Amino acid sequence: MDTVMMHGRRPLLFLVLALCLVVAHGEALARDADIIISQKADVETFDPAQSNNTSTHNVTINLFDTLVRLSDDGRDFVGELAESWKLVDQTTWQFKLRRGVKFHNGEELNAAAVKFTFDTTMDLERKTRQRPTYVAFKEVRVDDPYTVSFITHKPYAIALTQIQYLAIVPPGYVKQVGWDEFGRKPVGSGAFKFKEWERDVRVVLEAHDAYWKGKPKVRSIAFRPIPEDASRIAAVQRGEVDIIDAVPYDRIKELQGSPTVRISQRQGEQIYVGLDTLRVEPLKKREVRQALNYAVNTDALVKNLLLGYAVRLNGPMFPTTPGYDEKLPAYPYEPERAKRMLAQAGYPGGFDVEFAISPAFQGIAKGTEVGEAIAGQLGRVGVRAKLNVQDSAAIFSAYSAKKLQMYLFAWKSSPEAGRHIETLLHSKTRGYYYQNPEADKLIDAYFSALDLKKRQEIGRELHAFLREDAPWIFLYQQMDLFGVRKNVTWEAKPDYLMRMREVAVTK
Image 1: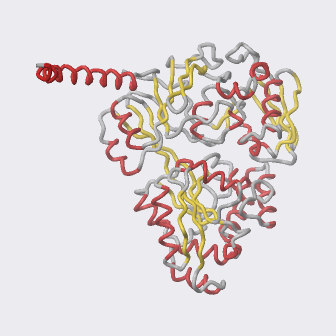
Image 2: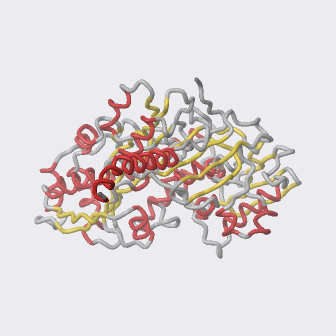
Image 3: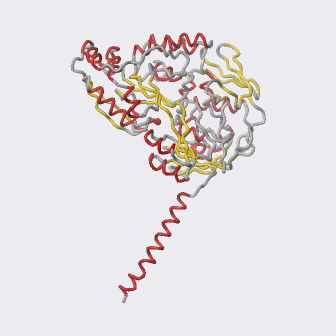
């Protein structure tokens, strides 16, 4: 009797369980904002000085304002908090601030707030991630309540490029709550205000109706980290999210054929293989480094792995970097020549080297496959590259500690300025893996040239020198691809950031 009754209850029990699962699933997927963006990673912190991560900056750029930003066409700078600016002398950039701008807590945004932001970013005790961005600046001076001057150590052509990353924070609120709390519950002056953060689940921001540019077109936005590509794509296809980043190239045709999703794209990261030219004996020789460039079939990588969604590079500069010389040939794929050069350099049997890769460091597309292909090509000329696969945090930590021998890396920001040349290849900035006095002289001259024509001339000389000296294996600039619901007006911009104030949802 009891057994019969239990069997009779099973269909009802299963129905109840199924309904519970549906409800739970519905709650998990419930839309908590007008526009939902899904990135591969969550924010690290809301303190903009403590992150160099694009996924984090895509969130914080909606909470904070900067003095200037890159124009939508990527060719010039336009004012944000700065109404105007001028070069007073060779080392002084003066900015006139907009009046009446308030932080979300009502605190006034003025020249003192700008100076506080800069000074605390440069504070050695804070050890901020953004500090290296501003090492060319000597100080920030308050000229009057709404006028501020940035003073560089020497003439610095890309001052505006660097200043565009300085997100202004409220001194009063920071002093009240401290930096740790500020990093969890931020107050800015941007188009959106912080509402909530559930780590690794979601960030929700709400519209700031009193924003100085005018209130946003939507009431709220949310960011949901979904690391897995397939899950992110499924979410945008189902309408659970509206924008996703890092669309894999082999899923593009599928999304292009969708009735509800479209692709938005822009030129993205430069991908290169860094080499330790200071501590790894074979890599100290220019001929060896050149041989490695001849040994890698970059055109095949672009065609077969990236399906053509990348631009082959002929050196360390982006095509939009002043001084980029399109007449310089890229290293051709000549493995026999590579073998001869290695033999002439004293390595007829090749050599062993550890090759660090990360599957998705800084958005590298198909990082594992690209690394494996490069290792295979190097092996054909006798260079035995032992792959060491690490996660993004581990590889960047090892990179900063100067522990890598050969590594697959990406540079994403400021292709229009060439900042990566100074950051990565000047011996007095990072100088982790490459130092050359002749390169330093050219880099110094390049960044000191305030006249654009002169800068382009020096840039071409620098480009040619670095191509020849081969501090890296030069690869390509890949495309950044996003999946966007067709009823959302957002388009990818050249400054790499997701500014959402003017984005709307149509019916």
